[in-house]
Length: 83
Image (cartoon, rainbow, N blue to C red; front, side):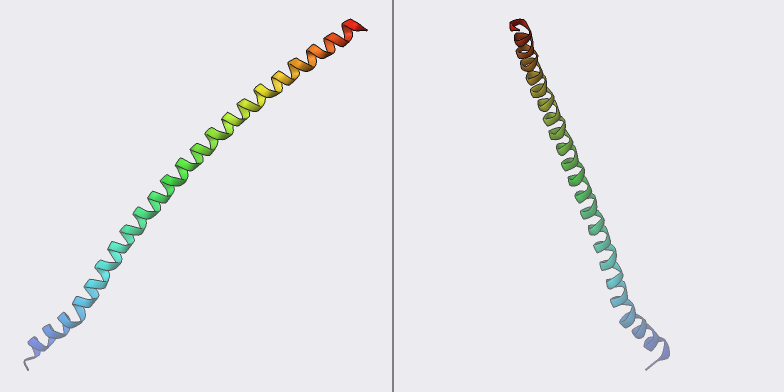
């Protein structure tokens, strides 16, 4: 067999699988990056939703405490008037 043909055959035999593995690694890396961005976006949305819910709950709690304070003030005023 001619040396140049043997060298070409060896390079193709070793080069094609190597190139295939390299392309596969690049594709998988890109897919993992997309998956990570998607996960980050979902966690950011979840964090925003949780913050909104905590803010709503804080506002409701403040309103409830304000009503309790008004009731207690009214009762105290009533007790002061009757004593």
